[in-house]
Image (tube, rainbow, N blue to C red):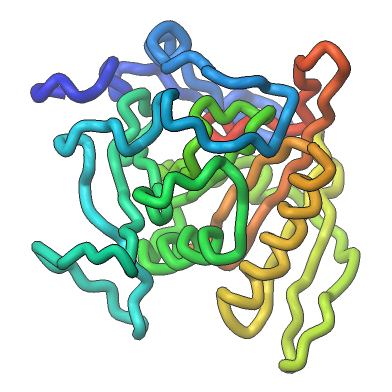
Length: 265
């Protein structure tokens, strides 16, 4: 805050758990509502081409960039003070969110210099799972909002932050729908939420993060092709993924089947 990088002081925002069956988390964040960057694109199309003329993350100041993230080759996380950036290895950048809603609120921007539009693909989603795994904290979550489901920038990015309490959806009961076929002994289990105000799918299992990433990304890409907005929540250090499809209507407004990631149930 002292450097003037944030639009407001999120630590001054009142947050509380609402009494009731689900224990939803509410936050009074007037700064985010009043000062957040406005949407610059249509909200009725999930897939839209990248537009260099509009705001994107190549235009943020260097002072907002925290570090580059790459998945490690072993179970140990490491920090390097400097590393070369080559044209054949575009960096995954972690930057501050200037309109935060919680402690440690950052943006993960996969292959930032490739200027990818906001859409899920297997490789980028795998980067997000690796970040969750290497953070190795049950309080650290990542999320994704598609276009038409509250994303405000058409440049591929994930939200991430710490919250020292479980989201209500993480405690919701589930019912298994299927286990995906796999050449290994362990496929990915897909379940549906039960007794919860919104519908959603839960993905977990698989022998590797790649197994889980491929199944979730495939589901998201199907939604994208069919112009269905959606939100994702990555929890349990990348081992559990929640997928919430949205329903759009003719007026280009959104009937939300789940609250977007920055205010997730």
